[in-house]
Length: 258
Image 1: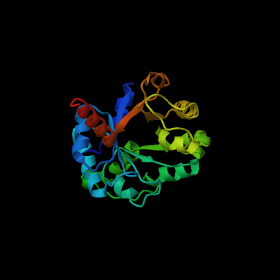
Image 2: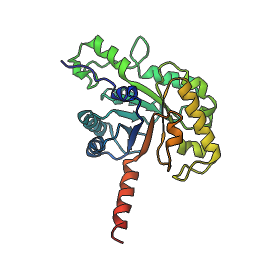
Image 3: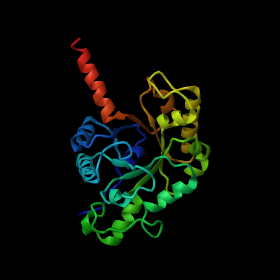
Image 4: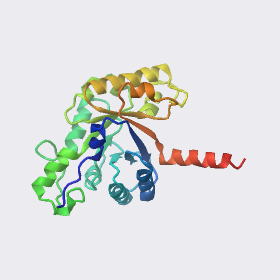
């Protein structure tokens, strides 16, 4: 029986295990499959900082689906013109960058939900709706239920408005965007050696307030020790982008020949 795909990341969260994420910036379905087979728990396909087109995105999502890897998409901006087209590809989560307050977040949530709780454009023949093989009413209901909505906290204004942002109905996850946040706060960027005290305090606040509100939390996983953040109940760590992981592998391979 053909059904709308369930949100695989929620199944992971229900097991209480810390998840590992890769951020995909290269337009390659092959790398998405490789990441899945290597054991990543989530791929975030980045439309904000990449040349990935909507056509290539579909193939990347299909590769993730086929390999059993949950695929989320970080859109270029909360009011992206092609948002409906992205959602129609069958992704399991959508992430809004650069949000600043609860009003912006509420508008974003509304834009990715179907009536009666939102204003997303209906397309019963989309890939997400299984090309109309699933009955229309069932597909729309299930897509409303299964699509996860996350926001990235990466501006000083979002940090100030964090309590209101996480209280917006429909927000399921929060990504602590430490690199942009370091620019906003005027601190050095995060490094393996640690976080600037101001950046660490900001990250701790994001984690605490988000977890108190019952949200999934993801943060950078490039620190030498993640244990203090695991003890704060961070759910997911993104271990790098496909670019950064490839650079690291190349450097390590070259070192062996020196």
